View (tube, rainbow, N blue to C red):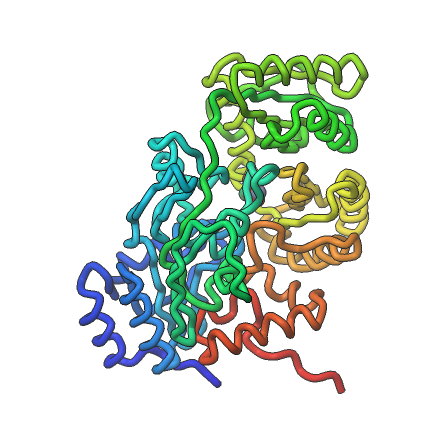
Amino acid sequence: MSLAPPSAALLARLADRLGPAGFTQDPAALAPWLTDWRRRMTGAAAALVAPATLDEAAFVVAAAAEARVALVPQGGNSSMVGGATPPADGPGALLVSLRRMQRIRAVSPEDNAITAEAGVVLADLHEAAAAHGRRFPLSLAAKGNATVGGLISTNAGGTQVLRFGPMRALVLGLEGVFGNGLRLEQLTPLRKDNRGYDLKQLLIGAEGTLGLVTAATLRLVPAFRARAVAWIGLDDAGAALTLLRRLEDRLGEAVESFELIPEEGLALVLRHIPGTQAPLAGAHRWHVLIEAVGDAAVAPALEAALAAEAERGGLADAVLAQNERQAEALWRLRESLSEAEARDGLAAKHDIAVPVAAMPGFIETASAAVAARFAGARPIAFGHLGDGNVHFNVRAPRDADDRAWFAREAAAVSRFVHGLVLDAGGTLSAEHGIGRFKRDDFAALGEPDRLAGLRAVKQLFDPAGILNPGALLPLAEPAPAP
Ligand code: MLT
Ligand code: ZN
């Protein structure tokens, strides 16, 4: 069933219910939210609607479903995959901002839980937990923009997934509304609840295609007393994985971050990000940023483990941050990588995972295959090696006009890389979601039964097809085979 543009009557109903703080058609107010974070698409919307409560969110969904008008939910607009940008050529959508829902509703250190509304920014969530001697154990470079609702809707990962898992593992309870009007009012800190299907999991990682998330009860963990941050130089990515497993043998779960950075990635950061400095004296093919947390014993323990590895020949060089300022400087090198890469030019970006044991080999063989197939293309792989998730990006040949190259080759490069990943038993979205940028590859390369399963769920919970149409799944069903 096709969607319709919002009528004047619908817009008036929404304006009336949401008031001036929750409804605008002012092009200047809309403009910042209509271009995606990677600046790859600029969309259009008839209005920006911003519910402030679950009731208002449910009203927006019901009104849009009745009128068959598309809703595109948005949090901090930091999607890497165009998941929160309404297309410019659709019938006309309403951009639904959850940013007005900004309250921390409750913190319970006894439950190790915090209840936050969808528009709470991740950095503020960290602060609220810290004020109660607790920690929300998920972080990523966009923490100053990314919101609770967006993190949940994309099942975000980041740089600290190793120990406590991605967003899906951290949501205890959820409040929201599905496209069919069904409300989820389950803001609970319960760890165990066996009443059948776990409905909240349907909204997690759904990329706004099934409903709106308005608030969540999230898991907290104890704050750590001290952290140890080290930067390691290595000759090959396989040695990095061996190093991780050996550190885990000695330090156990204290190792919370294990990030892989190639030499050319570090070079991009040093070239484009002011105030950064090389952490090690010499050059190394690969670098690893490690964070281990615990008490005062954690730094000596990490130092001893690294010394033992150096003795064994398991690493080429290492430096341990001596204070928080140095630790922050090392983290800045890693967290600036994406920005440095963007400043250097356009890249075909991939957010892939393969089984972690296969990842070092995959990086080598896939890099060689891409370079052989696309003359001069420059693969660069960095990220969350400990989780088996790297950003396997492909930059234009050195002397090419990157815009022209991107327009001509990016789609073919991505299809090729995604094919290699799936052949290796992996996924073409590990932490960013499918959104609009990965959708066609997902539809073309995904298993038919997986896609059929997603469509069946979508049909049930969003029967009018109004929620983020064109994200995650293509609008049209694939034509039946002749
Ligand atoms: C990262 O790991 O830095 C982010 O996921 C961003 C990116 O992929 O560029
Ligand atoms: Zn990442």
